[in-house]
Image 1: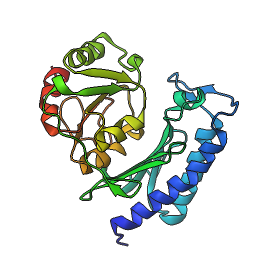
Image 2 (image 1 turned 60 degrees about the vertical axis):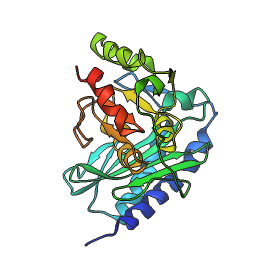
Image 3 (image 1 turned 90 degrees about the horizontal axis):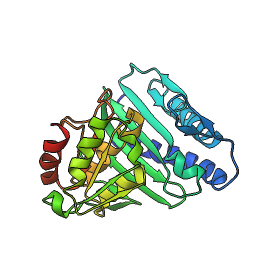
Length: 259
């Protein structure tokens, strides 16, 4: 059965509408925090939000696959697979900061078709889809011009994600050339690239549910997002991502990251 991209966008909005009140209900409440095998934190909020999203996907498109951070893969070989991070930025969430979000992507044959970033506390929602302009709360947004690293504002979630000397050296090489660097923000950073307030985000130690939703959003705003070798992001792209608002920044950054 053929579906229009708008059908998928409408469902993505319903998914975010379902997860937002769940996460808000737990925000700044005393929660038990479990530590997963990769040392990242997880809470009941993460699990409840993903469960709600999965239920809606299965009801709407039972033939679609799902890959979520908390409950793994289901029908992963399907043509269409939803990729979910119900609470991106759990460290921010458990420390009472509002910069956590929900990431929802839909892939077709492994390539991202649409992406959504929802910020439950801040009330912001970015949506990007292949061939369509990116929107923030229904209004079109575009990244800003920045032709060189010397004028760029750089961001990454936490310095500790550069967890080997090789990764840290490459990040530091870019950081030495930019105007300013900030840390923190998780998925919100990428929304700020799409909206024209940040110029470049460099991260590693990621999984597909951390970045596939970001690709249509960045690209629909006129930016670029690739791995550290300049390859477009798909299922199985690895753990290293660079996003730029101005495509002219990408070659300069890749010259340092891919070396």
